[in-house]
Length: 140
Length: 140
DNA sequence: CCGGTCTTTTGAATAACTAAAAAAAACGAT
DNA sequence: ATCGTTTTTTTTAGTTATTCAAAAGACCGG
Image 1 (spheres, rainbow over the protein chains, first blue to last red):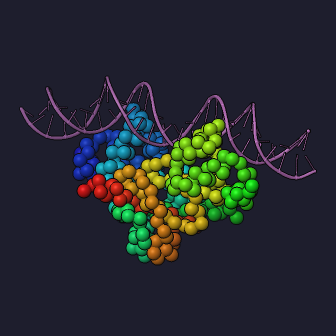
Image 2: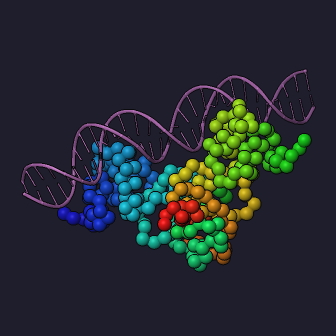
Image 3: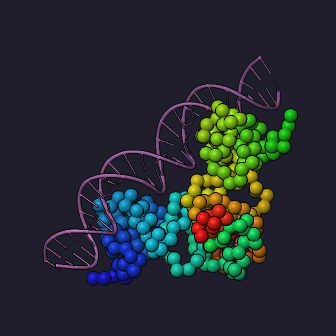
């Protein structure tokens, strides 16, 4: 049978292997996940896999454009499936929890620096820093 | 003699040691520098130092607020002396060169996500990705 | 000058990732 | 369905940036 994930992989020119499907499924169920957690999830379905394979698969899927890789300062690389929109992220300075932030209001100014020192701007990436709900409660 | 850097350090509650002054001087002369390059620069003045000491000093100066640490995806942590203004950075996707970007026009919208999922926003960090002048030339 | 505190040095460990070669699996054609 | 080629995964090593901890050293108030 040809599942939705299979054809997504093939559409990107990649073979639909068990490992890749398992990684995509893992990322569908958990947002903003690091390689280690993906590995643990995949291991339950595919016990023969290794952390290196997961790194390999994540890199392949990232260059194929099927997943997005983010690297907030202070934590390992995280991967997510939402790639269709250019949304941003907010990171809790206390516990490192990550939230999605839909495109900020007045997004146009954000994408155009007033002066870029001769650089050509392709994309802009915004990371917000703050406190997640539970750390706000813990703080008071 | 009490230099400007000495009093900056003391003002932050830190002792003005040779290592710390040398690190600050190195960062004054080079923008966006990683620990390795700082170490090499400091070594010329202070040959007994070690890369670990430099990491240690950089961490101290960062928490004291005398320098700023940035971690663009794909490169090691970089440090810079410009801390007074909330400027942003542009990274060359080809060679990793970094440029400063003064605060974008219409900065207010950038700092206020339309919805943050219960997070409290403290700061916003913008990273632009593009091509530096010399990689633009190399590309055509 | 002395004792306590702050820094640096030294040595070791860690985490995350990359590289390379061999084994295994997927795909397309027969 | 099966074969052979190509792609992918596994296994094994190795790198790099960084952190941790203990001992040695430097600084400063009294």
